[in-house]
Length: 152
Image (cartoon, rainbow, N blue to C red; front, side, top):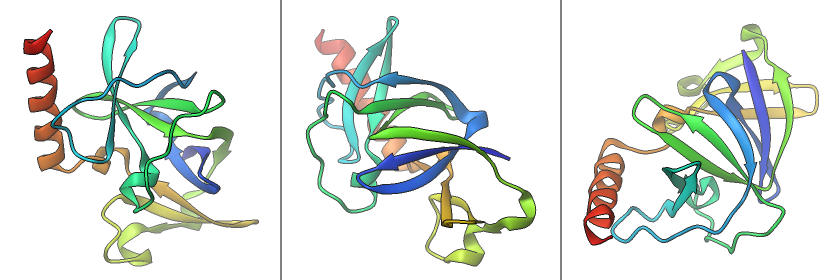
């Protein structure tokens, strides 16, 4: 499996490369009223509205202002394209399946994790991009996007 290693507020984690569309420079994010707290807002990517998620907020850290050198990793899920806010995308890594521990084995509460890879410089947590938003959060995002479209 190929993984894009990204850094978010000093912590490194992985995103499955098969879900990565592209990496772009961060831009100003427009608020999305009524969306879950993990959603920073939306951006326009070549005419398409893309929801921005801050993984640091997902895992309990406060939201911070976007810096000019931040990046967004555009990922695809079964239902939408998301922009994942990161400090930087560091590397493309090949992770052998034999060093990958399933998320349930690593932690029973790890519903957002695809697995953990034992790397030479420590463990690399690989997130499950399909689980970034729960079903309820996805429905709340859809409702907020529909309300925003009606308001404009």
